[in-house]
Image (cartoon, rainbow, N blue to C red):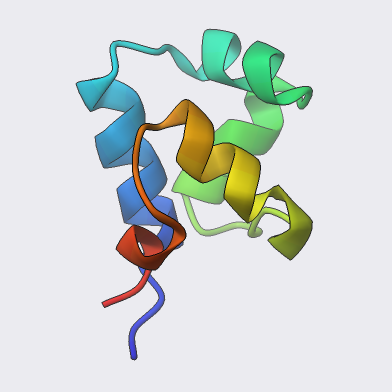
Length: 65
């Protein structure tokens, strides 16, 4: 199983027309946090995965190959 969280966040966020700022606002994190996730500097806390999936209109499984 491959973790694709950074790529999938960026892909699904763009597909849903959300900027990093707007996505961060909806999730309750800073745009800088979203940027760090997308650039593999750090990863979102695992407890955020259900909310990430809900906001990005996907399933948690979509973050993994």
